[in-house]
Length: 524
Image (tube, rainbow, N blue to C red; front, side):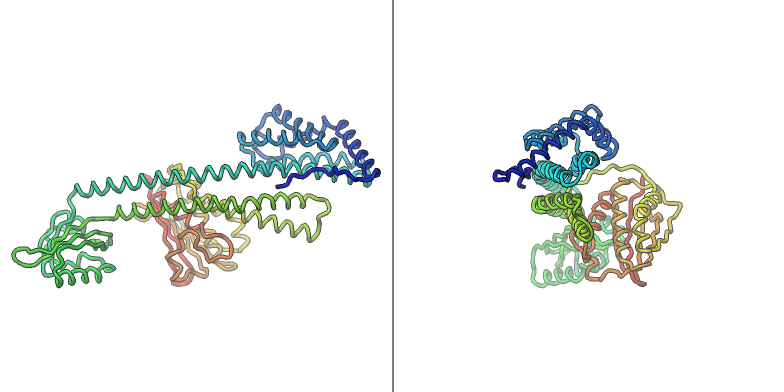
């Protein structure tokens, strides 16, 4: 960004030079006369009005910093000397790295100088001279704010680059850990007894205890049953095809993955290795089946880690490409909004523009948050106050849309183990989705009860519902049919809930609308 300097060019007329000299002299007299009072008032308002972070600073430190900035402004306004301002910005920039001041907080601190000085100028000066002094003051502050914005932006870019690099290292390390975990798992599986069976003429004529345990049957219940009784419906057609092909073409060995069917109706992924041989003088298929539920989960986590790395690189690139112009645009808009000459429709347009710039910045922040690893602070907590807290946060939104909320919360819900802040945000995301789905004066029903070892929370709405084509993808990152947002709300909710050992599902309602159910494990 090009630095802004106060007008000081050769070629001015003698009259212009005299006017400038007069303006500088007036500013110098005013600042000398009121300098001490300005510093005292600046420190007072910094300590009381800007932010809790400024309020926590010592008055001695604030006086020292404000005095330096006041001296730098004096040099710039009266002598066109900006070297002191540059030095002060470097000093405040280093201070900001230690204390964590935001760009907005520092901008508000600088703007206090203008708000303190303007009433003094109105008292001391009149007419065009007051306007020239004010114009010079505005140019000085614009230079200061732009200079610090450049410094702040450079710092943010460095932080983003460091974050992206650290994220890559973290993902690489976790990927290696997952690979090592999978290797150990494979070794462990090889050392235990897998399910062993003999399939002859389509019936199980022999099975070991591990096979019976895998399917939830006793030995007596297994032997003599058709092998298809142990295959889940979604895999039945494919397994029958494998069996017929093997018996017909005399394939000696075969390995495939299917879903086995448990006695309780469960369907679990299984790896089957089958060898064609002879058993008691007749052709038979001898198989070893192994539960691969954990292995498939590990593979899913590896894919998730790879996707996380990709999102990290993408968000770092987007933050660099988007936030640079956003920062410049925001500073320019705020400066124009504070100009005395902007009013009416022009001011309204600038306010709309500032709002939209802030919205884009929030979207970029949301993407960065999705890429960050989450740290949790679990503690036992009741579910009812958590739901009430979420509704309290959304009270204004609920009133605005005239949405009716119906609650059916059981008094017998035990406590759950959760991170209050993160679970609150997850439930807020689901509730916001429901509010946006219903029409004006829609209805949302919230129910909670115990369901086995889980507390089940259900959020139902009578909105437009979700199509059968979209339903499998609503929890995927960046999937959205809305005109606003980037589709990370439900993805983040799923991520948080699963990290709690819970699960989240959505289903359409026969009466229209959608029901989202959240199961959270009970605290033990």
